[in-house]
Length: 493
Image (cartoon, rainbow, N blue to C red; front, side):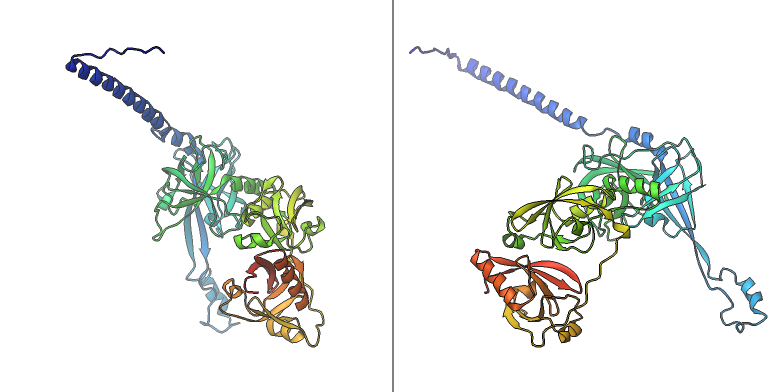
């Protein structure tokens, strides 16, 4: 084995100088690498928003609405009704002495060269007159016609009689440029100050406030009163949201603003332009989220996901063979996480579309095909009246509940709408059932995802679940006709 000799300088000063030079060179390399990394990072941040603002500003508009608030009309007791002086007083009092004009300000943006404008419904709701102010140098005070509104998403479409207008397009609110942390720019008419720009980042996505179809982008770009209806741009100049609401204790911006995502808005706008109204898909089921405590009680489910079907009235889902207790896991190729996602996807689907749906049923996967109806024209299906019950119903005390088969007296006492099942007549206030919101008058119509009508049915379902080693049992509970699933632990049995 050969050895390699290393020459070590005998002069200690020379050694120190070599070591110092080595580390100095290493430090310089590190500084250069760090500088390059910092410069690369800095290049991802915009040096200015001026170019973007100049590009999109001509398509952003200020909106002024006015509404007549009626005051007192008629003589109101000054003269007797039918008096010959009544017409005279009516002439003096036309419009009512308290009548006044109320004005409001908002924002919007042009989406086509022929004059279609998008804004919030609450900006123009109830307005007698809508005037559009274009970017300085454009047309001032142009009257706008209301094309259609959608209160569910707070979106409205207007039309002005102009052509060759500058306009902006919708972008992908879930793609590049719309990620959490990406830069965005808001434009509008905050507090009536006219055209104004603010910048920030996407703080969060898929926020819900209170609507069924909510899909908000949260941003810290300053949004104030008057910004409503204005656009939220990505750095490509595409509209990824419509500024709609803020979270604030004082009415001013505190850096928590919400813009309805373009994924929702673009679909609504197309329908309003074409039909003057929305035409959303309708599946025809009642659903609820799958909670963690339900997982053990549902065969084949490994985690809390999907949408649990609580009821299937007459409609598209019933025609497709869907059943109460099914868990919708895939809709039109999209894996369903929760009920909110399912409602949004169904609502964005066209009426009449044939949609493949995958459901989990008694541990197996079932493939269904549903032809969607139209939500706006669907009506609730009335539940049948209660049938004649037994004279002396059986009763039981299980799971902290006192249960009875339905009787005429109990139907009248609790105003029951269910035809079959077990009604809760008493409940242990310290029980798990009470903690999960069950109350007297609730009716249990299913246990273990099978229908029950007698106490014996329930006892059989509990025994089956216990024998199968389950820790809980899933109950379908109806209150005033509205169903929901509740999982109760079997430990108490």
